[in-house]
Amino acid sequence: MKSVAIIDYGMGNLHSASKAVEHVAPDMRVHVTDNEAIIREADRVILPGVGAMRDCMAEIRRQGVDALVKDLVVEGRPLLGICVGMQALMARSEENNGVDGIGLFPSEVRFFGTHLKDEQGERLKVPHMGWNQVWQTQDHPMWHDIDDGERFYFVHSYYAEAEGNPDIAGRTHYGVDLAAAVARNNVFATQFHPEKSHRAGLQLLKNFVQWSGQ
Image 1 (cartoon, helix red, strand yellow):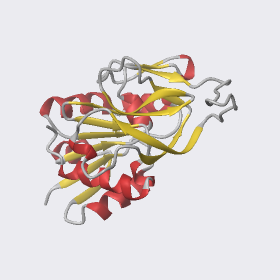
Image 2 (cartoon, one colour):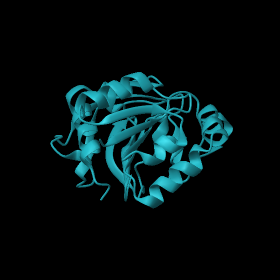
Image 3 (cartoon, helix red, strand yellow):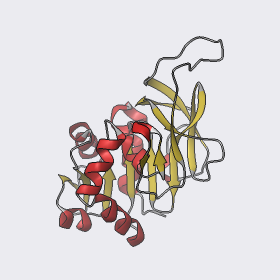
Image 4 (cartoon, rainbow, N blue to C red):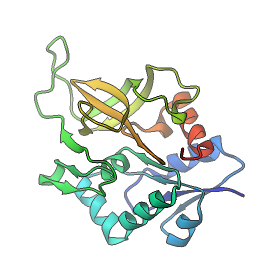
């Protein structure tokens, strides 16, 4: 039986993510685990994340998840990053006075700021919390059967820039253009929470468990 490993390093939205994957992949074994051997044996791996980047990266490094993730990527294993899990894959974040990420993507993660406004000049709340349209910028297998402009659920105060981002796979707008998703080789990562995004989110997770990583 094929398997999906959701990496448990103490900083992820593990229950809802695992239940969503179990729903779309009833024929696959879903492991929520910090066991390196189980993660290395899994056919696909998810790196979740919630909370402060400093705390997430401290646990990722303490538990050796950064080195493990790099190994999996070199091996060609399909990897999905979610929310802070996506931000952790970047080079660096402005959060907590600056935190280095795993560095699979060269982009930096920026703070929205305290004076974010919409097109009408109205103040936007930070964190960005709610549903936003995502416009697909790559023809990628992970977008299969998902309409361009579909809405996904976001909760975040920091974002990866869209402008000049060589790996952007989807963009959204909240005061600024931001990367809703990035992709490179066998890695796909989303700023939004697919496990909280109803039909479109479940479709993306279904695409992930069927994706070969190419």
